[in-house]
Amino acid sequence: MASNSEIEMRWVEAWSDLYELLEQRSDVKCLLPDERVVDIEECKSWLQDSAYQGWHVKVEAGWVLDKQGIVASRWRD
Image (cartoon, rainbow, N blue to C red; front, side, top):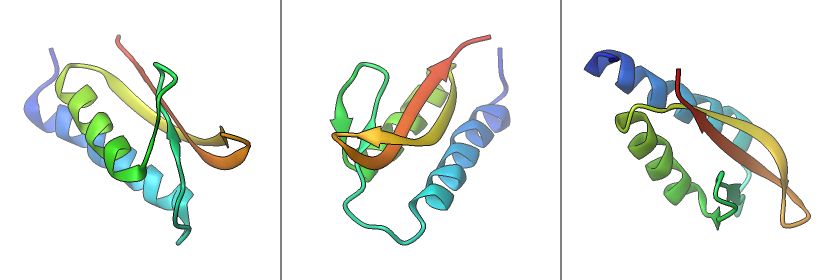
């Protein structure tokens, strides 16, 4: 099982990647693995919650509703 600091680093690194991908853009949507499309604040909450549930998390640039957006994913060891 991951330590608390390892868990925190998972979502902190994902948030950092998220901000890099946003590049000052607003109104960017995020596609979650369950195919829900959410705003960035909800995406950040999902990343943090997933990390605390034991998941590894990742964000990548992708297409969401025919616009450039963020695609989030998660997996376990």
